[in-house]
Image 1 (cartoon, rainbow, N blue to C red):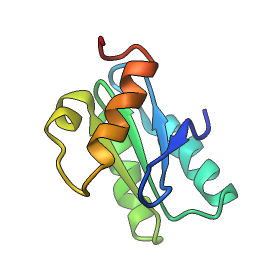
Image 2: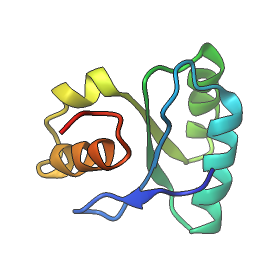
Image 3: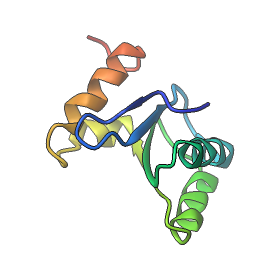
Image 4: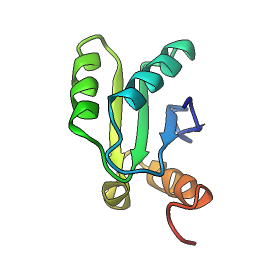
Amino acid sequence: MGIDGFTFMHRDPIQVKQSENVGRNVIDNFETALQRDKKDKGFIIALSFGKGAYEEVARIKKEGLFIELLTVDKLLEYEEPAGQREHFLKYLIILKILPI
């Protein structure tokens, strides 16, 4: 429900969900966790996201809060910023979303 970890390079918060069709409520909860931690950027990783999640991310972007939604498929293709792809993959392995 909160922050599961942080990126290696910039210490941006990460939340990982082992589910599909993640909705707006997850974004709302992560938004609160970011604000509590005084962060303006974070990542949510899931198998897939629903329309409400994308709409909420677009809405809060106008307020200066940037949440990037990453599906596991996209994460496997993720290249930039340097070093973060490997960091995300380690979280997915630890949380048993990806096999070792």
